[in-house]
Length: 278
Ligand SMILES: C[S@@+](CC[C@H](N)C(=O)[O-])C[C@H]1O[C@@H](n2cnc3c(N)ncnc32)[C@H](O)[C@@H]1O
Image 1: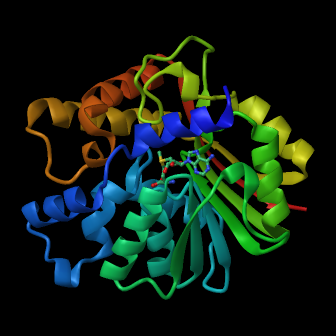
Image 2: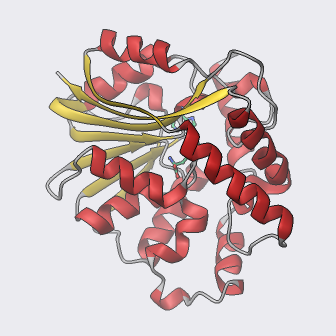
């Protein structure tokens, strides 16, 4: 598929319309005070990946994130993980995302929680990172590579912008049994914008790029348990005011159900990865 068309499909999938008003209205409806908003208030909507904030904290600990690090979050969404890292460790994080609207919302939320001195957001393509070689101590990425077909180039870009000895921290979705997925899934309405490879293939590409794997952990079981819990909860109660349906729209219940089935049937796997740039 031509890049412009693919990017158009991805942008329509993630952010078809202005999000700001919807998020502000939902925060108010949930009884959050906009004057003293905390990052925890935002966690149900801004940690846009399996197992939410918990997965972010686990990856940060596994990657040994430190205050002095300058971090690049690739596919940063509306900025939950970057704000969480900045608030927890005091490090500086730049978020890069294909969606201008997501970057705008990410900056607004950073202002609202008083973190704009530590985080900044830039629209761009992960396959053509707008940064000089060896600019970052860590590259962070959660649930973004599924929309990107050229993994060699993606990992090559991660490698290029990392300093020698820098760390890649990834939490991603991979193919499992090889069977076709149930669609829509949270990252794609149909197969044309989903590009999963197996963990084994990914590991080979990372090694060929020059990364030294430090942690290679299958998180599929915990991910399945998490989806089981939220799928059960959402069938028992009415939709929560704050949740990822704000980003993913009307198809969200089907995405949730399909993601749970894909995990349970072994069609996808979730991995936590830490690798070092040689
Ligand atoms: C499921 S969201 C995850 C957001 C964030 N990492 C998080 O965990 O909260 C995937 C994000 O990847 C972004 N994305 C997809 N393809 C991209 C690309 N080629 N370059 C940069 N960002 C991309 C999307 O716009 C979307 O914001």
